Length: 194
Image (cartoon, rainbow, N blue to C red; front, side, top):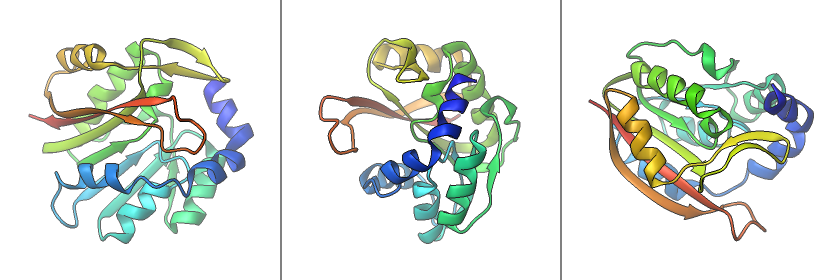
């Protein structure tokens, strides 16, 4: 709840800080696994930056976020309806070709995160692809007013052992794309539904 309150209170500032960040290279790594016109869910879309980019590139896109205010801002920006939903309320089955969870799952405690990733896997069609990113490290707890579960390669392996049907396709570490955060690293992974 603390994390949702943070985003409700800071939605406009967060939107301005993230909406123009260049994420084209990471989006391309995700889209390389999808057919043209594939059906994508932006899970925890924040500013709507990536949902808009996917939509503008000709993909079918749904987007959701846990913050009502970010949903409003993202809907206006991306010119699409962004659904207000808590992550733990997601229950789609075999709907999406790809699910994009950029810096969103990291706000769940590990056990809840594992359960939600299981639901995301269920929401993917066969051979569907899940992208997720986490701050790199071992930390789990409240930092900067939000809950974080950081990830490293070992935690990815553990998650994929504990979520049946999701197989690691690719994993890489990147630097933070936001200006002024030179020391912050991110773990990115692509998992495929098998």
